Image (tube, rainbow, N blue to C red; front, side, top):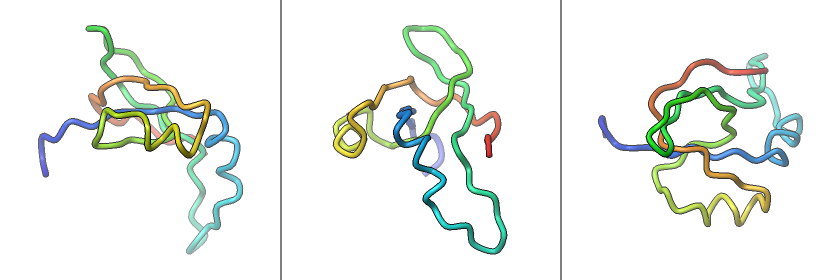
Length: 81
């Protein structure tokens, strides 16, 4: 649904386990993405390992105990492989 707010989270554990993912059709595995996010009224580029539709951190924190809320997604910048 266009215009839906999304929220960015980062986990070093999630980033470091990306090598466990399988590559299909010779595509590279994304280690993390860089997004422009807005938090506390400021916009900045940050490393993000997951984007969610919910601001509630619990689903991400249940899987990664080092989960950090990075802010509201403004736009995607680039992927890091």
